[in-house]
Image (tube, rainbow over all chains, first blue to last red; front, side, top):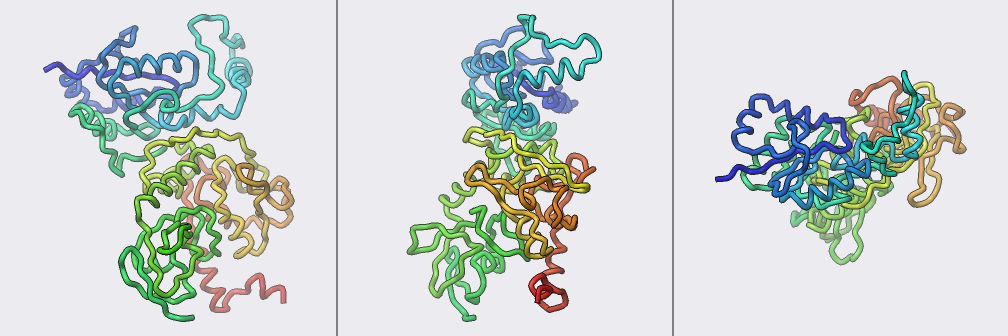
Length: 179
Length: 244
């Protein structure tokens, strides 16, 4: 039997959800036997592949690259999971939403800079911020949600285990938690 | 006061006609979610979470402000009501900025618990991400209107229990907001006694103590019971009495 092709993506988030994923500890070894990891910030793979069975998406849609990527993820994946509160609600990433993106960049790169205060605009590799950071499901259809900031390792393990058995994770009360 | 017999969820119950449907339900271990209701304060039916179906009426009735009637047939748990409750919590979540992870009352929040109770997996309507006023001018407390659900518990506790009536609601519809005195910074309020009751009864992180960090603040509303009970027994001089 072919192993399920699993991906994880890091959009507008702090990578805390991925840190929590790594907190699976020795369970990662079990998991590595059961899946084929085809794309992830913790694997050196440049392009999001086709035919992904399950993808965990961390973070809100905060810039134009995220937006474009979200649609690629949807096209190429069977089961898309919003992974953590930023993907589900916008959460901390969306705290800038009441402000103008230019003011936010100015605050971060000019006012708070120790060296060479300058907004990094002139590089083609740096994506423009969207006016607001918004949850993933406002852009693409999402099939399941893992809550928490970050989700706990147990929560991730429970959800991933069920997903690998082909089930939509039944999010019991224990695992429905914001914050 | 008269004794009436009514049916809630198929169960025959008797109650007195000066009670509310919410009181009767809770006395009989029938669960009803609430947000604006708090034992010891008057009921205003603001949050609509305790809506119930009453046979013969095509409107839903808030249990907290509805009195029982002889032969009344009430349902509290239909699929329609569950759907509406989930919708109400979703709308409350979408209208404010409730980033639980950076909130002082994280894990001690009534809105958060309601989201779990109604099984709010995600919010279907677009988030508004409002930019409402935060007021930290008071020496001990902060009001963050972005986390306010307009339950008006603060308004009522300040008026009914503390007798100061600092808080009110200004505006209409989506523009409604809690204001201090004549819509001025809280710190400049002359009527505020800094008692902190509003902070303790606030179900979310809209009213918090200064100097607390994320998830540190627990709200305790038990004090209300003592004040209200003592006042009923005449052991406490109430606002009304002191004016005589």
